[in-house]
Length: 112
Image (cartoon, rainbow, N blue to C red; front, side, top):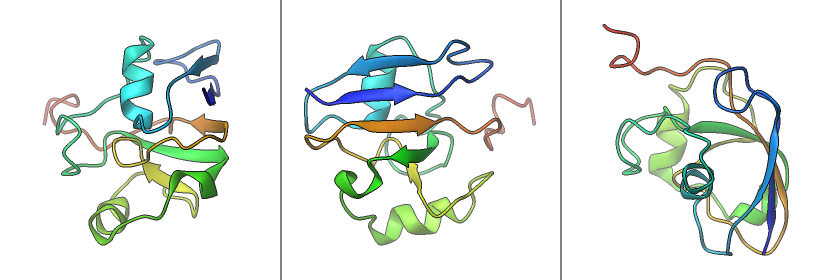
């Protein structure tokens, strides 16, 4: 099983973590299953950007972005060339390293 290394994030994973998940699992599902409660306001339906992650290693192994994900990512806070929506990025056999951005655009959480 591939290993997912999560870099420290003050809210979701203060110490960082290493988890594993079967190939074919979305990054979001893997994080949630391992009690790293990343935001996912649209319930993983590719309708928001709250599960945005930056893939520091293993980006190419996650498959290509489709047009819907690319369009949504344009609205994500802290967008980088190696950004993905964790609900749309599925593990292959390679290990990946993720960074969860400091902020997300979640109006429900921000009480707007």
